[in-house]
Amino acid sequence: MSNNQKIAIIMGSQSDLETMNEAVNLLKEFKADYEVRVLSAHRSPDEVAKFAKEARKDGVKVIIAGAGGAAALAGSIAAHTTLPVIGVPMETSSLNGLDSLLSTVQMPGGVPVASMAIGKAGAKNAAIFALEILGVADSDFEKKLNNYKKELAKKVTEIKLKV
Image 1 (cartoon, one colour):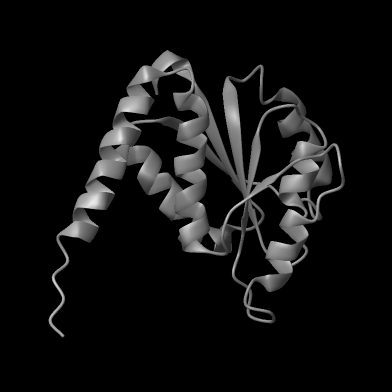
Image 2 (cartoon, rainbow, N blue to C red; image 1 turned 180 degrees about the horizontal axis):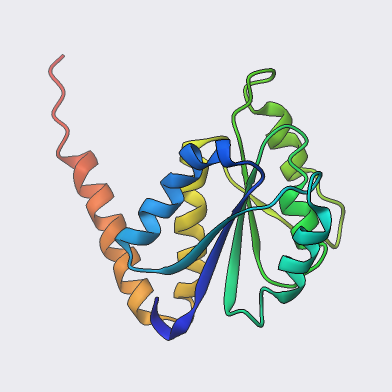
């Protein structure tokens, strides 16, 4: 990643990796520097707090946090850092991720978490959003994002419908 900026991808469980790989793959495509870790707001809260408090000095600029159910991970991290935190609600079997979404977006005033869509689309969008945050001060990412969005538009305009 240019300027040695790092994006941290944190997930509440190893089972979230299938979904969070959408973010990983996009960051690889952009040649971004990133790290991936499993930390649980409920099972390893001290480790979550330690990570969040030390993230800035470890070179992290943006944190993507994916969690399901009560989805406390993003909020727990945001409570301990001033870095931008992007929440990715995981799809769950009991409520299809609605529980995760509501937990992620219902943060108290003063502890912001940007919330993405539920599941894989949310993980991909979280990576794009993290790159957009970094792109404010990094012209390489800005150019790559502009090209990425032009390609998205091109794919749509190339669709021919036969009705």
